[in-house]
Amino acid sequence: MNQIYQKVLDCYESIKERIPFTPKVALVLGSGLGNYADTMDVKAEIDYSEVKDFPVSTVPGHAGKFIFGYVGDVPVVCMKGRVHYYEGYPISDVVLPVRLMKMMGAEILFLTNASGGINPSFGAGDFMLIEDHISCFAPNPLIGANIDEFGVRFPDMSTVYDKELQDKIKQAAHVNSIDLKKGIYVQLTGPSFESPAEIKMLRTLGADAVGMSTVVEAIVANHMGMKICGISCVANLAAGMTENPLTHEEVQAAADEAAPLFKKLVTESIISF
Ligand code: HPA
Image 1 (tube, rainbow, N blue to C red):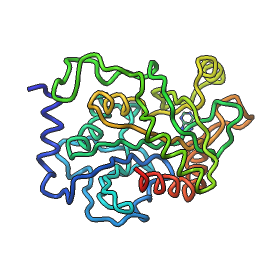
Image 2 (cartoon, rainbow, N blue to C red):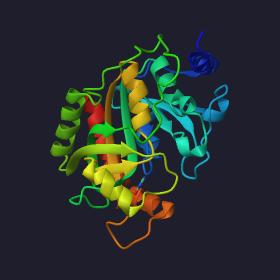
Image 3 (cartoon, rainbow, N blue to C red):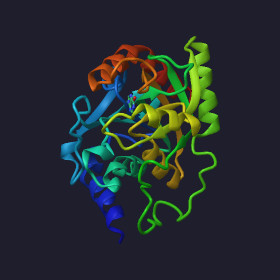
């Protein structure tokens, strides 16, 4: 059997007895949404360290566990803390949690993150519905022998972000008077922030927001036939767009400030799925 598939299977086998329900939605919590579970009816938690051979994140603010609970009537598995490529893990480990959540039964992948705004009409604290992405600056997680159990060799990428889910998120934002921007998210590897010249290049290429996650997760979820949606919290304007140098602490603080409204948008969206 394919070794990467075997590893996901082993992870699943090591925790399956402790999973309280079949989740409908897999929610990846980005910066600022770390304590989202406080708003959920939590049924179980599993520390990443308890999952056999699971990659454990090393980034401050990204401590890791799966949280199982209800958002309204919807059974959700949350990933509190994601694994980033810049931490040094192989790309197959970076996307392993998403594959595991699909194995748990999740049909929908809801991705969230904090990003740098590239679109000049964006400001810190804005939310951007991810309509599409640019992946070519990050390694493709499907490189290597195709895992037929997950999907086909050459997956179509014409509509990675499900139109119906996008409409539901737009509607949730509208009903709750939350201003929701729309745009293209580009993933770079990090961990250094971009240079001003790189930001100019990314803008020319059509990107509206930049970050260090999400796209590789969307690629494997799309490979597995999940329905995908994503919202990015613009934590700062990207390098060169203001005088300020960028720091992780500043990004985290801005994401924390936007968190209450972000949580509301996520909750109201999930309830409508
Ligand atoms: N660049 C890349 N990743 C980020 C940024 C940024 O400006 N802000 C938050 N995550």
